[in-house]
View 1 (cartoon, chains in turn blue, yellow):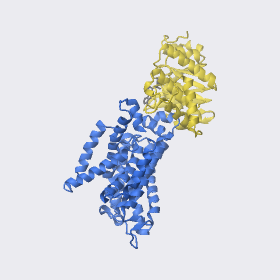
View 2: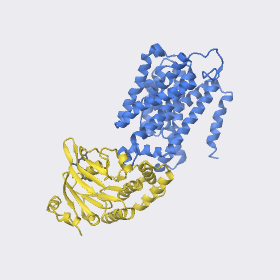
View 3: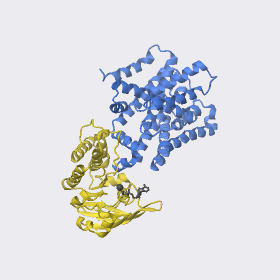
Length: 332
Length: 243
Ligand SMILES: Nc1ncnc2c1ncn2[C@@H]1O[C@H](COP(=O)(O)OP(=O)(O)O)[C@@H](O)[C@H]1O
Ligand SMILES: [Mg+2]
């Protein structure tokens, strides 16, 4: 019974778009799945103490090249996407290798990554001839115009994107599971606690950290590519920079970065929250969401450090509150 | 087997280890003693690659390992324990040792084999091998044993044991000394054993090396060293109990 539960849920998620679901909800679901993938990628680092405040950098560097290659050379996103993901991974090496090699850890690592997100955003804005700067850019419509173009990955029907996003998100969860069941997980836990002791038993600290960073960068880049392709609109402020970087952090912490579904639950909460704020306050109270995010983040870090989902899982698995097992349960 | 050649380490002008040279012979237990702060742990950190020496060279089995990183040195066959135990608290006891067995041998690709080696190491030191035991449940003696088990699981040929007796009561000390002896005789592992207190150590080791203020002041058989005037002066005579 319990074994089949995940498959049942996946089957249910797969048929959702074929039920009469209002388009707006389908739209939200797509955004949640994509942000869920990105936050899952972020948490793969975050849960091992590699707190990045610059994942927006991996987003921007992945999605813009893909869109530019399409607009200028007509290169299909099926090729543009791997190039974009490759560039995100390359950026991961560029920032990760020196940082890990020279033992930049904790707050200092967070600060370096903070700069990373902004550098990418400012670069995109600076290249406004090409990227449209702060005004953003639109991928060209495929010619001749059709409703379904697999070549251009442009669909008027949202259900196509839903299925693509669902597959990518499941791929992200699968990556999470692979990591969790590998020796790399133990190694990264050990490294997050004590790098000197980890190295003394033969663990190559730099390469372990680098590998998880590259996986995280790739997942984030892929998520960004899907966001840009789905929205058919790219904006440096929403696909790079501090704002989106912090949103990823916020969602992951609120949902719970130590559990497989936590980051996705966090993405769901943030997206639903952002949408309802917009519905109630309209555009009059810009900055309201960020303020409330900040406040909630502090409250969560103090009172629910394992996030909402981490809390639920721990309670559900061990209602008696045996904390030592609780920790373990929440990690798996 | 190990050749330490006028190795020095200074921390911002302070010489913690000053041109120390010695050799460790295959199959022996070498005792390394000296008062607190005499540079024993620092010397271990230099051999195991945790610190880079400011001078001198370290050779292990004919190979220059002076500037190799700690993970490489571990793969070459030198394992070390930490004076103050550094367990990975987020991992279970068994996971701590499986991890070390798996990564400690760079040719090893099998988790099953890592587990087998881990269980063997845990049995050698007398710790439980079941998966559920947490590190938090271990006391001071248990944590010392975990340090040893982790080191042994990497299949070393040379073991650097740093103050395995610190914080133990007399009976635990005897047991620990006995264990090191067994590790040498049963597993054929060469040992350098650091201790601040001389008592139990002197009965087990083949040779002794004495450090004071980062310098080697004596080296030789336990009997000879214990009666060396320089050593007696350092220890104020009172701690040298061979009985
Ligand atoms: N990382 C370090 N930074 C500065 N000083 C150190 C460091 N490690 C050790 N020392 C100093 O070096 C000296 C030798 O220390 P240590 O090797 O730990 O002595 P022992 O193990 O013999 O008690 C001490 O004075 C200690 O304060
Ligand atoms: Mg010491």
